Image (cartoon, rainbow, N blue to C red; front, side, top):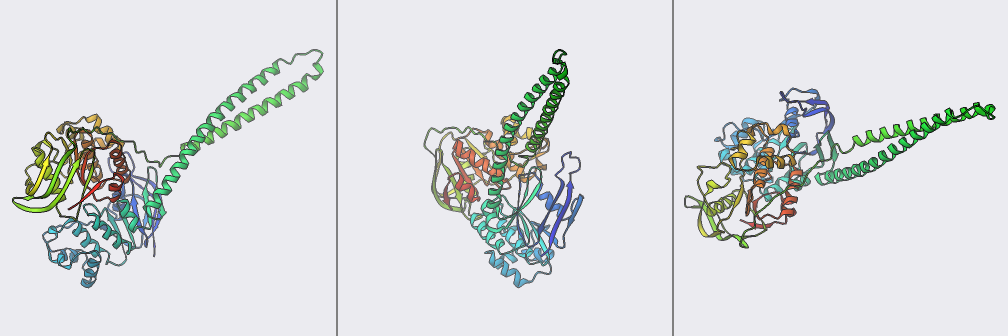
Length: 513
């Protein structure tokens, strides 16, 4: 057991005026299973790179362990998996590697297959199995669940719960709960470390936010009362001061000195009371300004779905689909009714995306849809069973892929004929800064790219929203905003998504492939 100490850490990207970190200090134990959370663009991946010494920074990072980052690049994906692992980690014992793969539910024969032929989930499991075999290494695991199915996430969570010594970046709440014992959170103004899993951390945060909101409301009342009391005291003091002038000589001349002394003392006390009230007011204002700095703003999103003239929008009966006459998925049967939320579930590679694309192809010319820029790809076809879609059906589609995003946000909005100002307003609600609007889309983080696709889809009026893994890389607060949007506006939604908390929150009907 040892400590990783971060002291007065400050870092700003070259050319940027906004610091990513400013005078941050905390420490973590190398035996912890540390979940790492924060909104997109806050600096989670940047911090992991700082730990590895990839950027110059101010302050200190002290550690007695070496850091390994997941996922590490694989220069030649055509090499066998075992070759890829041994090149990176030559000290790995073969028998130990086989044992780790078994714990992850992966067959040994994947070691002798070209790395590029593995699914994303198989690649992740193979690399993690090898990385955990290195002694005195602390793992920096960056979003390992993207594209993993529900079963794969549960298995990986069980596996990580038996390990120790890692930082895990993930936005899957159930996954974080299954395998972490501490949480590291990048907030709006600081970084905090807490004991417990995600649910414990989130409950504590909500309690702290509620306390600060109540305290702020009370301070607003107190400040108003103090201002009024100070004003009245000032007026009374002015009246007392004025009464000094009214002390005229006469039959009371012999008492005038005592009277003036009494009035002077009364005036002094009034002034002292006024100063005390103003000091209390200043302290209350200062305390009020120190509150709510880490309260995350999650404004409600809006959507105006179109109402279809029939109850049933899509019917699949014993549907089989594939490419070039070859069946890759099915048979599967389901219906998509007006206002329903339907989620396709199944193992990676079972053909969930193929079903979505087959529906797009059936509904109309795919070129008229937002296919994610996937022009010229092999089109899916129905190879068996029945697939029916309503006539004149308007669909808004979100692709898994974001690699096609290029150029400016303005150009993207124009290309898809959506209102630029509305799209930017939605992105602002999803925690985009105005500075990020000026960046080329290819320079955005993966989470920010996904938000661009989501915002564009929300700008489109459609009968049916087809979303293919829309929440990959999306931060937890934005997920909650999207859940609330679906509950409020009740669009007809057909999606593939492996976040079990999301499915429960929107009341989705699960269809297994």
